[in-house]
Image (cartoon, rainbow, N blue to C red; front, top):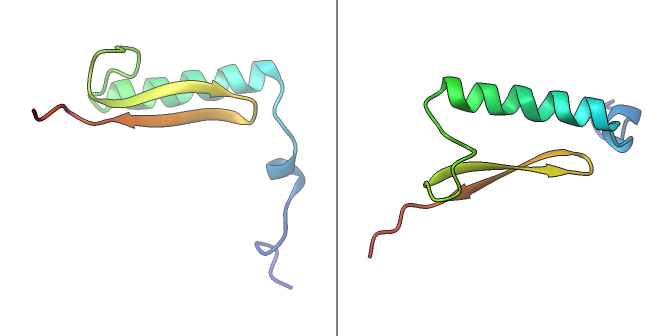
Length: 65
């Protein structure tokens, strides 16, 4: 059996609040270092949202009209 075929405890378990915050901070820092501004609600590009399992990354497209 391939170990990647089944769920793992790391995937199935929801991280605690401190772990989710650390993940959010790390993703935010990585996006910011890459030239994005994920905290600007009016800007196009990635936005971060906390999720019970970690961080949800959404992409807001640029308005073309």
